[in-house]
Length: 149
Image (cartoon, rainbow, N blue to C red; front, side):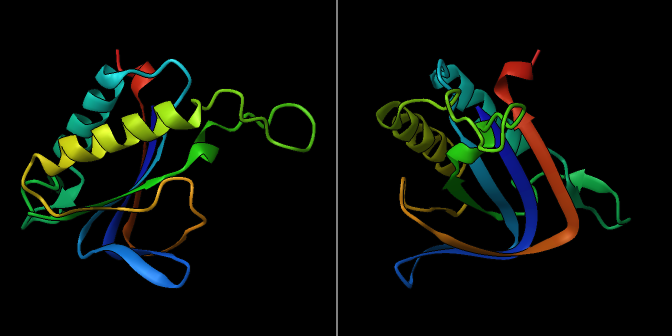
């Protein structure tokens, strides 16, 4: 499972001109599910998102987690994170999980995040979405559950 985390002052996602999810300060998470991913990958990803210390403390050091700052999390599915661009001119998406399994694991990860008690919003799986964000810092981090050990 791959994720790109962007520390945001605010973020929202629209589908067909309607806002379907928004948060204030916190993480915008772009999440891609890879063929062969399991609930263990989703659990690892959720725990890492909750525990990463990338929010500033009183001394301006990245020393606090999203839980510590009581931030929000906006999770948007993005299979294009699994693109292989090494050959040719069009990306290959063969590494992406099939849609039914990807949706199941995407929602599982979102539920694990919501279990923290933080505000968690999502996009709409397989929809064309417009995502807005104000990247704070900027801080952008990458996670890959297959590179967790």
